[in-house]
Length: 590
Image 1 (cartoon, rainbow, N blue to C red):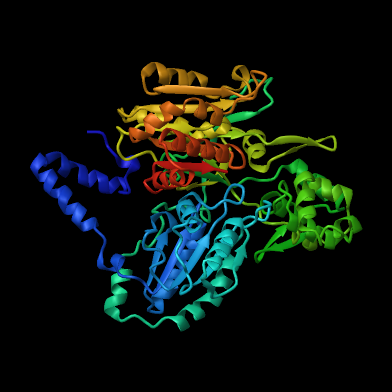
Image 2: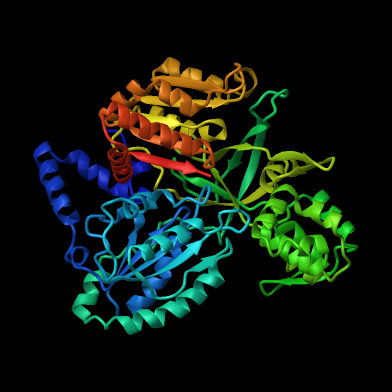
């Protein structure tokens, strides 16, 4: 019997206790147990009963869910009937069900809503959207100011809810990547308002909600605030030396860390800035690095703070504005009144080049106060725990570009491939992604679309399906600029085809012919086959660039559904939303 533990919500010990019993049961006993489990899993009275407050978490990496759990727990402590629901689990036919709606929403890609929130987003913008004139609501938007579309998904939800007639309890709050302080302040303002608007629930009613609550988002013992030390085993270049792309496979040994992962998860890596970049900035600002600074209540030498605590490789509008005020440079100060000009400047001028252009003698503390915290980088895991239980494999493109005659690098890929040596340790954690999982039924066909480093999770998917001897068909659509120099994992994929694991391998080499060809073009070319697979129950997965590829692939799928399924554009969108709700259309885009 093939173990489903890698796709099961059960822990490994629970499954080990359960499997011997299941193996002893007769078919009749298994059928009875299945019916009993279905009855137990049916909606409880609390799930059918409207709550006074509907709390929706629209999360991409878990942050929105964590904030929502904190608010939920405080509402329970105040004896309020609140239901916390992941956006992907909402019943849209009954939405909003409660007179008070609180939405905590992350932003991903190019200002997009998280994958789990897309059905809700499309529903609210469709002709089926209800009038919300009797609803009051609040929105906390999470984002990253390093990107132009800061908190855009939360802004879009806020504006749409208001346009449908809902009334704001509080103005929308917007939190940067270091979100905790903003989130705590928002909760401290919102909580009294919610308590004033709702009566306390009696013990019996409250227990119906608290007893049907999942307390935490996962059982992973090592979160981003408690990283573990994995050991770097190797970093091997996958692309040819002549390739314009520098893509590496990075292998980390996780033995003894307690880290556990599933296919579809990501690994968060805490990088350090390069010593060369830190020394360059110290010299430009006339520091020697021994100056003391305070960050989050802790004292650091300036050199250590710049190495391990401050973001130096990603410029952003807030950094430019802060440095403009610090340097008093007229050229920078003139940009403050024009947000788009700030964004444009930040996108084309790295922090070090900005400082070089407008160097100023200042205090060490004033300088670090201009900089955001150095955040972990997330990488899709490209190995299966069934094949590599003691290792995590990553597939990463090294960020490297020229500006003003100097070569600049990204923080994490430079750290992993150049600063560290085999045997060095890496602070990391597993970021679970339950929105990017193989189907529970191993017989279901799978379509995987992942150009460039977007192939990473699909290497893991194929390893998993091979190890489980899954009977479902597998179709991979991948690509890169050139077949000769950029064919990632060519030998492995060829072996998967030969073994029958990979049913279809479709490649798009965008620069190997006069007309550029991308994965979305290949998808459209094979529209009849795509539709046939969908009719057979195929699950579709997309991984990679959110700014162009993911949107173009989404458009190609909608066009295929419309034309091959003989649907209107709106019917095709409803069909695609149905695939999302059924977990048959999952994306991991960035």
